[in-house]
Amino acid sequence: MKDLSSEAPASLKKAVALKYSPGDSEAPVVTAKGQGKLADTILERAREHGVPVQEDAALVEVLSKLDLDQQIPPELYQLVAEVLTYVYRAETKAREGRIHES
Image 1 (cartoon, one colour):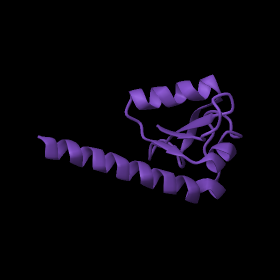
Image 2: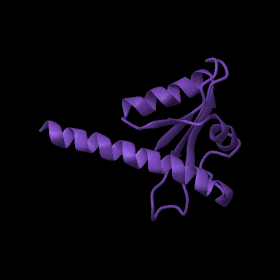
Image 3: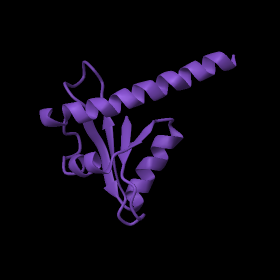
Image 4: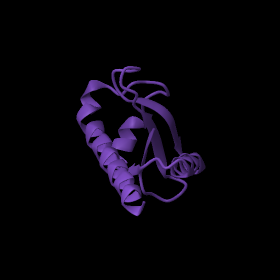
């Protein structure tokens, strides 16, 4: 799962969570979205589960218009691929940090 958030006053903050499971779906799927307190809850849950959070207000605005369980449309593939690259790198760095601590 991947959370995207936009920085705005708490009452206007938005968050969208994406999940991508190669083989299960052709593209990432919107698994959660919300504004205000719900956005805060989505972000809190992501952090509790060690899910990297990427802030991109423009992308969140577009993704928030999609329905839950909807795959992202092809025109968003490039933007979401950039976010997934960020997530992959963050997870790789975290894993490497744990390996070096051993």
